[in-house]
Image (cartoon, rainbow, N blue to C red; front, side):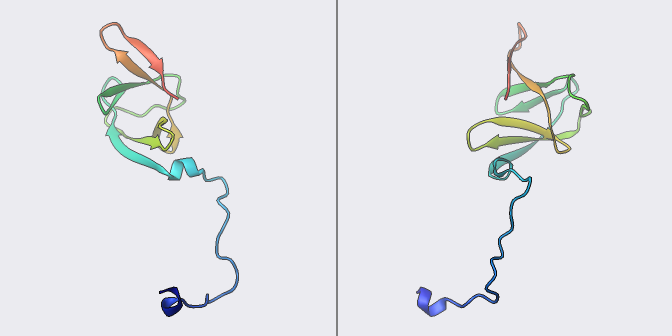
Length: 101
């Protein structure tokens, strides 16, 4: 099959380019869009993530954020190309939280 359909390259030079500052972790991932609620909480797959006020800039309520799930299972919430610091709300009644990487 290869002999029948193969062709020599138009140019002998390698056309690949280096990645530079691009991270493969940010390319090889699943992305989901979510909306920030009025209390700065993002919902994703039955989990609640509180956006911390320690972020330099905060998204406004109703702004869209990107939930990025990497191949290693880690989760990141991105807004305007910036990773947000968040805490997962694990027990709403007593406000117990755990840090998200």
